[in-house]
Length: 264
Image (cartoon, rainbow, N blue to C red; front, side, top):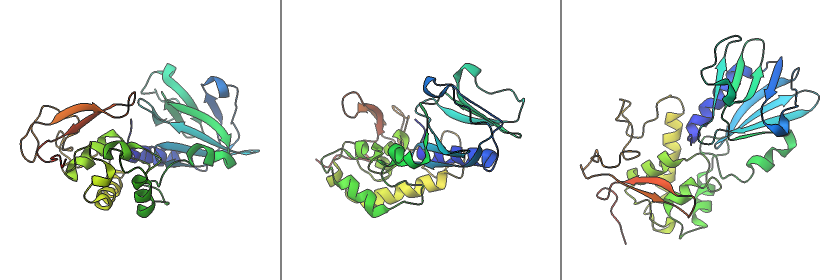
């Protein structure tokens, strides 16, 4: 699933292409909204909220197109008449203006709601690491509400803080020297870990290639994520992998047993 910085860049791309433009055509290819026609309405803006995308549209009424990329989704912007880079049958939303065609492929969530109902969609989220509402103290308060929860599970919970996916959760645990199974109340310096999360996403949102190591060379960007069985970049210990998380929500988890020693 895309990380918060990827979703932020997607919002910026849509905003550049559609903001202030009048829709000449729309095609929402999900049953609940298949008959909707937004042609003639104007796009006010697209913003991200954690991993959610909100495209605000104004016609006779004010609407919000809410989309979520989930695991496989993505938005692409094309020139009118340009060949699409992904199969047409995977398109879920097509927004057309005089200058651009924005296509949402394989989107996990597509819905249109009145603007005043936006809070129903994203009001449950914690502080957005890349949003104007970012609040370190509030994020820490929410994390500490569940002291026995593992730190990796807590970081992935978007109601605690919004924007961290599986990659960043694994990398943050490594950078902080904390095993992913560590309970929240046993993390030595939780404020520092969350501050690092904010710094990493903020740095990476301005570049297409994410890096937690500071090295942008291909194959050198990450410390442990997706590197099971390979040597740790710091100590050469073999990186481990396990499926961790609540039953039915297990996620591939990577860590170095030497750099992230158990404190139990």
